[in-house]
Length: 456
Ligand code: NAD
Ligand code: UDX
Image (cartoon, rainbow, N blue to C red; front, side, top):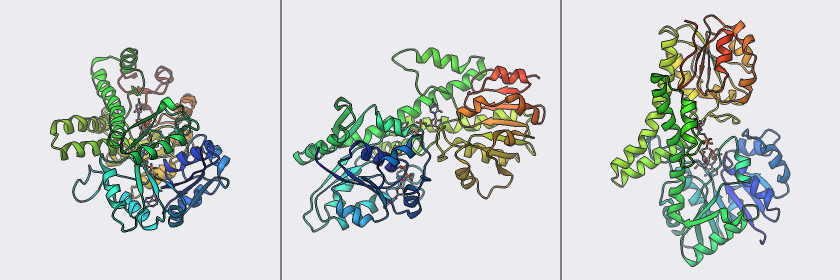
């Protein structure tokens, strides 16, 4: 592969790790990551990276300052690089037409205009952000609206990494997807990008497709994954009524090789910056094409997720004698999943707010996410933040597991029980604790989708 100058616009959870992997695997490439947020760029250039991700510190250290650079100079970045990944945020729109459903493409469009404004030579522009189908058409129209004769080719290369395992996912992806126009130039651009990934990804895992299939596949992959979680969460409600055990059901069902065992853990609901936003985006797209039934079908995945969170609160209320007022409740974990400090759309935010509404006193503990938790719950009284889980639980009436951090399984629950108010309750929103052992210590234990173990 010949030398390449690569730019990524957007130094977030995707842009940073993805570019660090490309720089590490392609030492002949020069990779620059730019962002409008100077604090974020300063953090990428420091020993305290802006995101927590296992293995990321080491990965960045290998290349930073050699062939990996973080900068705020977007104009120079665009001028000096031929391949431009765009990895800016595409949140759910909060205003105007499509509010609450459609993707907010303002950051995306601003980037397109910057690329047009600052380019002096031909560019390959790569959609890394998750976008509605047909966004590449809008990108092409903006890029071709200038009166200079610069050639722009737009590719779609959606990212499938999950937070908490980003480095592993990037190093060994199930597949890399590259969509392009099926013109001579589009296929050429596709080939250039494929050659970069082929430096470490086996060719048979580098999939190519037409550009609309590529854009749509990303939304559909997330919708299918989230649908599995909503399916098992719906079943957890039925298990609680019937004395079936959702873990046993998931195991029995998942051993059917046609179904598979992954993404079958019942939980307080899925969080994260992607699932909800991408399904809402899919729902909006279907509605805008007049596909009402298809939109309703996917919307139910979100409704079950909301239901599961409210069901959890109602379970707590029912078990704790229908009042939480004045009771101290420790939330074990605040991140939307383990191994990340990210709390975007974390079910813990909803649970904490509902507990506050019920006038409970909330104590939040998490090994990585307390900074974000403070921001998410700012303005709420009656919440405290404690790093140490033992101190967080002391004096509480109940503890509720929000995040499946491995450290919670290794805690000394006898010590925790001794420090709590009695009767002491555990609500395990992730089914990660040893429920029988906790019950034998004296706790009243409420797992998800399994019969409770109580002393009443
Ligand atoms: P993020 O919010 O962490 O990062 C986006 C960055 O873009 C921010 O730092 C922001 O300052 C920057 N930015 C916005 N406008 C800019 C501009 N005009 N110029 C330069 N920088 C600009 O978002 P993220 O989680 O990295 O997600 C980025 C995209 O990737 C989204 O479309 C998301 O759906 C998709 N995605 C995310 C994940 C994930 O796990 N987080 C996984 C796959 C795909
Ligand atoms: C997801 C997709 O997995 C990834 O491919 C895409 O690129 C971005 O969106 P992410 O949101 O980072 O990744 O994490 P993921 O592991 O998918 O978990 C999402 C949520 O589902 C978390 O809150 C997690 O705890 C929850 N979950 C996951 C369950 O409740 N049960 C499961 O069985 C699996």
